[in-house]
Amino acid sequence: MHARFAASMLALRDIDHLVLRVRDLEAMEAFYCRVLGTTVERRRPELGLLHLRAGASQIDLVSVDGPLGARGGAAPGTEGRNLDHFCLRVEPFELDSVLAHLERHGVPVGEVKPRFGAGGTGVSVYLTDPEGNTIELKGPPEGLRGPPE
Image (cartoon, rainbow, N blue to C red; front, top):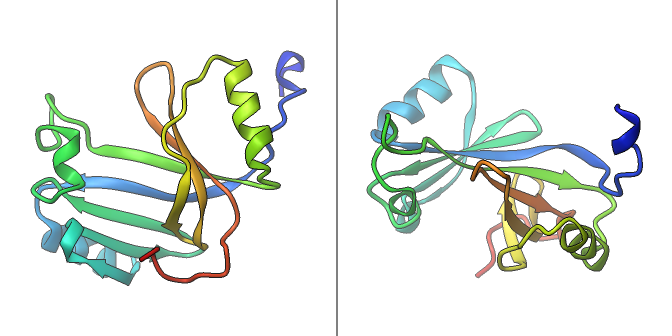
C-alpha cells in the first residue's frame, strides 16, 4: 500500500455482492447456475431481482425491464450500464465514523438503511466514485437472513 493511503480508517473485508443489469433474466440465470455453479438464493420478482449464491458472496441479476433495472437506463451496451453497483463489507462498521470519513473526503452519501446482501440484512450506505460508479459500503448482518419487510 502506498504510504499516503496507509492511514485509511476503512478495513475492507471482502466484496459482499455485485449487481448485474440483464436483458434476459432466464438465460442469465441458466448461465450463472449451469455454467458457473451458482445457486438461487432468493427470487424477488416484484423487483425483477434474482439473488445467486457464489461461495461466500452473491451475484444479483436485475432485469432491465424491472423496477430496479430501469433506473440504469438503456439495456447494457454502448449507451447503458451493465453493473448497477458493487458492495464492500466494512468491518468494523461504525456508521458515524464511516460517514465522518466520507464527509472529510467530500464524498456525498445516499440513504443509510438496512439492505439485504450475501451475509444477510445489514445497514449500508451508497456513494459514487469519481467516474460515476455506485459503491455500497455495508456493515455486518443484523441477525436477519431475509430482506427487510
